[in-house]
Length: 107
Image 1 (spheres, helix red, strand yellow):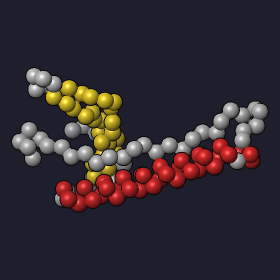
Image 2 (cartoon, helix red, strand yellow):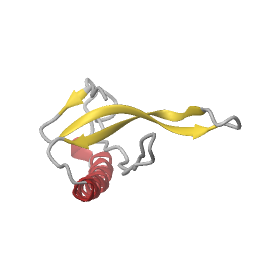
Image 3 (tube, helix red, strand yellow):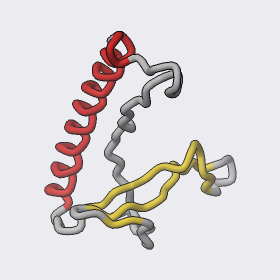
Image 4 (cartoon, helix red, strand yellow):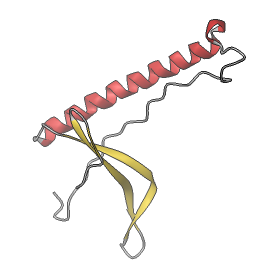
């Protein structure tokens, strides 16, 4: 486990979903994603709650960003001048999911 990033509460890792082929060899599927793990919570049940709360916050932020982007596009006062870029930048929040995984021992 080598994180590529570290924040105040979590470590960030690159990861892929895996699928077994017909010979039971594991293959990467889909695009690379980012997995985050809590720095300070050891109990697995508490980790799951921590990440679920984060995902709910992320979902709310995504909804608010979509509404904000819509309002910015529709507001005449926020339209760019001729000298500026054609569109204002958008606020974006990524989809959040909680994944569970097991090690080689099924734990």
